[in-house]
Length: 407
Image 1 (cartoon, rainbow, N blue to C red):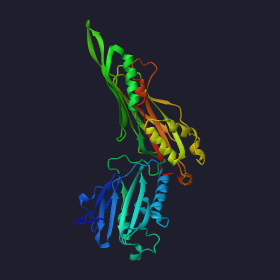
Image 2 (cartoon, rainbow, N blue to C red):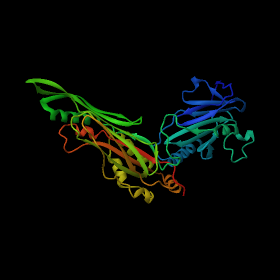
Image 3 (spheres, one colour):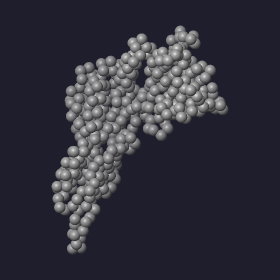
């Protein structure tokens, strides 16, 4: 609960923002003091004894929205009892799943609201008197106190520097990008293998992978640095060696059945012998198995993902399972010596499921998503080294079901 607030005494409408969520407010709503807002942006309406908090934490979903809502409902009932009130509340242009329960201390009420937008889960907490005391319990449309409902009616989703879906009802939402981490023992074996190939002609002094999953463009960088001995002007001299490179991709926040990516390859090598290719992994499986497969993938193990792709779960709609195995590799870009090259790549995604199909999947504990695997590779004519390191510089774009078409 709040204990002190900073007032908006001017009466002018201002707003609070968390990621893409904007909530305007005006007097008599009052803003909390900055030192109270480490975990949430908070508002207080003293005359109604209402306190509202918009949580700063907006986790990226690892499941589709329908599965998230179903799991959240189960968690609420497990925490607060089977009799807890759970329903839907419309705030602005979006629907929020809410849980109404007694406060742990005192005779007040707590409302927890959650909504998914652009692959993230947003949460709001509301504290206030019980509706029965206010005489509003009889109105089934009044899910939360009237003053809070009027405030939340102004809630909006806007672009504050983060990519916003180009369609209000996307079939797929990009929720995250995964880069399998290389085991240190594996990297040590790779560098030793390449050092053996170089032999007494030189020495490798830098060797490894860097990943950048959090920005747009995201990407990977591999570095192979050192020196070689060469005879120049009848003298044996040490010459710098740099066979490093970088793969980047710009990814839309949401897509229908076509996702347009920008793929960029930078090669600091005298040989134009690298390329970029991609393939698609459509998955439909129990939520727990998909979560486990993605965790294993993050740790560098691809076998669980491949197993799920080969054996879709019973109960998955035909439209989800028809393509439920990895497509063949498709080359999308060819590197050039000491240059950065790029291309716009069109990726065809599976058809979106209907609302009824998504609900059936969630009820069965199943989840559906698509992984787009993007990887650099060494062409057969490569005469350098580092091929195995370069092929580990791959990333996986995770697309999950967004707003499905109506039945």
